[in-house]
Image 1 (cartoon, one colour):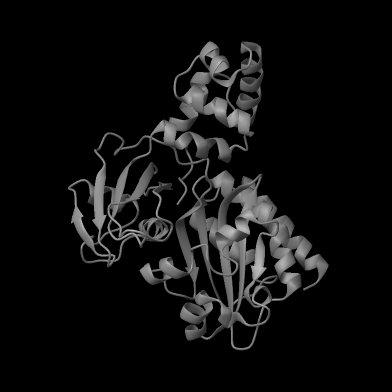
Image 2 (cartoon, helix red, strand yellow):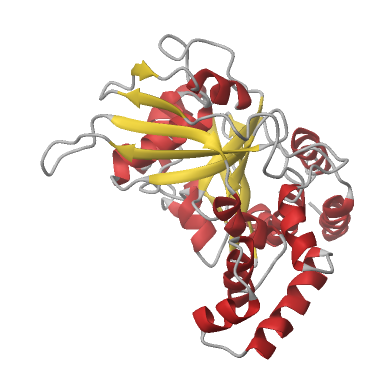
Length: 354
């Protein structure tokens, strides 16, 4: 892989930030561009919620879609080169064989998922920009082939570029839409990962996630499975915001319903509903690359606070609040608070994320 080939691929990927592609098309185009510099036999791509680090959508290449077993093993933080570890570490890409000292069988993921499929090499990369994780890929090679350190380093160089591309895609879908006033739906999943109860509204929200089956009998959407496994393993409640097929954002919240004393979580409750403005504020702030202080202020604006209230809450002067607002308006591309709130609700003339 020559330096010139890498440089051209890097530049072509960078141009996609302004291409206004739908997410599946973005997956496809980046994959096509990288075919010459990071060839693989199979792969999978994910978008993520940067505030909760939950995978929210996926696309696969030459492999089956992720199921409950894959969600249980492949995307949790305890194994080598976990996506969360790569996203939070100094290096955002990793080759499994290098991380395991040449013995990938030390990885549960390799033993349970990769080796049975004849996979010998794995390269993982997380798309991190400005400290936020927007997506990831895992590339695989079969037979005796493996990825090199040069390919790993090139993938690391691509991480912020891909982060900006996926962050740009995250600005498209907004709150609102035909289901905004519909009541939340609830699923209760038992210790064997079976759905034991479903409220009448839940099928609507599952349909927003692209699910056309029956929750009690058919595999649930991957994002639901990812939330379920995160709660089962880590224990605390967690949530994610996912762009629905209609263009509106759906908020999912999962929490343990019961657990054995000092043992694993058994039953999990999952609530699905229209994303609210407060719940979307951190994601929107991240999508526009706002600073920590600007994110705080934006959330307060979206909650309806005035200048004096914001100044009091943040222990700054009203003049400082106005200065921050000016910077926020410039980054988001609006001229007033009303337009800022409208940007969160707006349905743009481009296709939504997902």
